[in-house]
Length: 456
Image 1 (cartoon, rainbow, N blue to C red):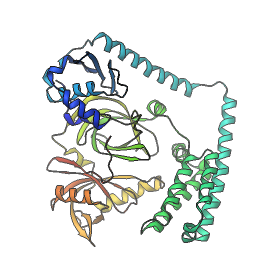
Image 2 (image 1 turned 120 degrees about the horizontal axis):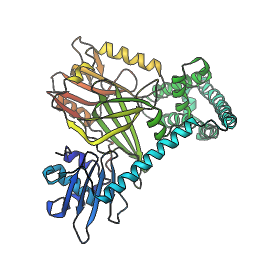
Image 3 (image 1 turned 90 degrees about the vertical axis):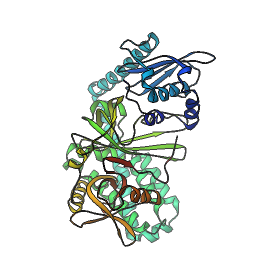
């Protein structure tokens, strides 16, 4: 029988309007010939015209014979909502309808072509002299940009941050443009972040000093790249501005097959761009994975769909980095390869019972990649206490760790944990405080929400 939950089905909606229209037609009388296989779900939506609605579970990907371009449309969403509530309406069949089979073959051919293209691209040996010349030229451009940025940061240190905050924005923008011209967009983005923080908020001096320090460390790492491990140099290059396509990551990235618990996911919306941040942990490996996605009102293909907090999915991830395995892409997974966990006890074996040990481990990881900004942490048997008017965690050894909470997450923490011990997952940005993302208590996983969370 189908293993699709209403929450999971709703998470696939491209926007609130489509979801609302889908709910109104998600009735048995509005669909016929509903079926499913290990690979797909299908059905015919009834109406003024009949529409074939297909779902490829391995994407997930969608196709409907209706004229709507934005997918999944209301017919597909209605079908998914219907069978998530009444799975007995769907008949299991290993042979899909002709139209669906043809579509799946085209998708497989496209995927195979992408893999072949990526393999050929990485195996290509012709024109090596030209490639080497282009690579050398880019490194030369980046080197010039790095040298200018280093002098710029040293001038800031010499003048002082207060003086830097009074500077005209033109000098910062000019430096940023030079870095972009030098093909070091990553450095330009980090510089722009520092510029935006100048003079903003009560802790702006400490925040800017930390960011400038991390940027300077990255510069020094680039200068000493010939003495560093190749895997670390890859990370340095990525941070500076060299990019890797998703297809390259799926082909060449470090793979990890596991049962992944979805800890939490956050969506923000700014300047017409959706930014998605998903955190998971592997049941067998204890490995964390962060999936990032980006989309717009007109194109949400870059966003990951169908994941439900507290549910476990089975599949393979491909990590971007071999040095610091954190950001990843879903390589193989099915929309139906998920289940709500009745037993979360395995989480405890991957969690720290001592805050001091956890912080020490976190600092060791930070030393390996000091310019990273998000560090996952899992703590067990911790309780909530107040420390100087702030929420904090205390372990069985009476060690404390301050929490960085907003009003929403603070109330959720108090409601979920109370005074009882729990297992808590959070993200540290500074190695000292923790932003709570979710907790496990009495075998129930609670994922916290955020003030700025956006909905599609």
